[in-house]
Length: 240
Image (tube, rainbow, N blue to C red; front, side):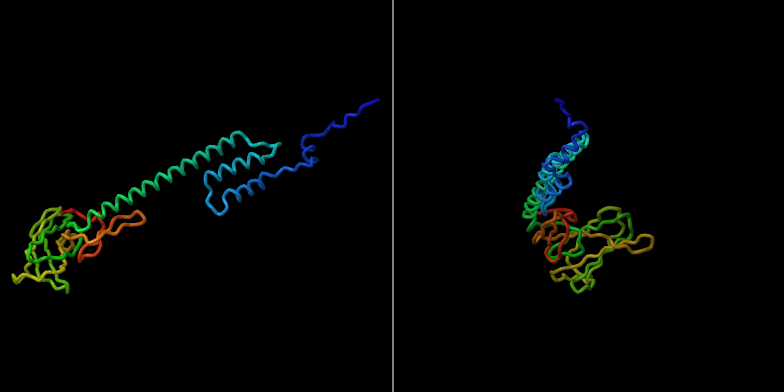
């Protein structure tokens, strides 16, 4: 009796094709895994790992995942996990920074500061000390003081000044020598450069009424009595 070999010429591909067991394609598996892992959320490290495992489970046995591609995906996963950790660390630093700002703000309320501003609430029974900032030497330097209505009540000739900060004192009197009423006054300094009058920056005393803390990590804003808001970076001196 003769035996016939019926398996001759049959390949593994033919066996898989005729098998009742069906394999899920990589694209279909990845699509299902993506929908299951991520939903409507951003792709995180857990979802990334789930997609990687799904890809390995649904790879084509006739063309398995290349080792170099697998290592590259593991490297991507490691980078993703590092970035996630970095984001958590930065968020923690930002939270600590906001807490530090709140403590700093509470200590400034009620304090006297010297800030970059053109207005000051003046008690004319006392001298007011201020500073004019000159980008270069100038002669003459003039300071004009105006009341709340914009009328100039006093003009101070500061003479020749070198580059830098030039201090001035106002005794609270107008040009006629009479003591002005207490209130809010504007200070405008100017100097002549190349034959042209140039406005100068002034630093004046003020009292901090309240502080505005930025919710987005911005700079502290000091709310000064009778002067509005000014950034903390514009403050030259913090007093008692």
